Image (tube, helix red, strand yellow):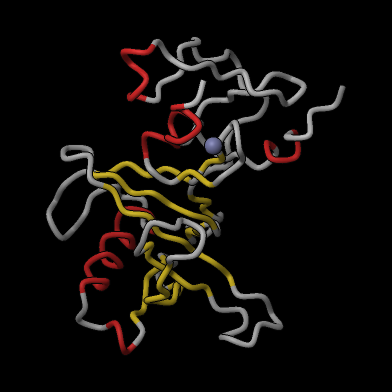
Length: 199
Ligand SMILES: [Zn+2]
């Protein structure tokens, strides 16, 4: 019998593959005492079907092109994270057609609570940079943009604001319900906290 959830599983970009070859969720709840850790009780499946898309594509001439998507950037030392999106406007969009917009997640809804704060541009040397929108210049978002530029756009994984090392994850989808996952713990385990509590 076909699994109605199957179509939800086709666009995962990161995290373990918690589906079998028919698209069924193979995640099982951890033992009661460890349930809060959201880690799969089953061992990680072997050999994923395809390698994940590269985070940063470099053209032959050295140009770095950052793909559209949702990025969660985590401080390796403190575990603190922030979530950002990069989105290319459609050619017929009413707002800045063709532009690439950098937004910051500012709220609990990882689909809707984004604030656009800057444009992506490619500099003469082929590296990507962010240009802050006037009304966000000098705000706290400027520090986020500066960090994203160094950590993700230029692939250095170091935040110039504090010198700390960071990890970058693309958003995933919950194996059970298909919701977007952006917290590092959820992306890595492939399941959201609400579904992980159910058994
Ligand atoms: Zn879920």
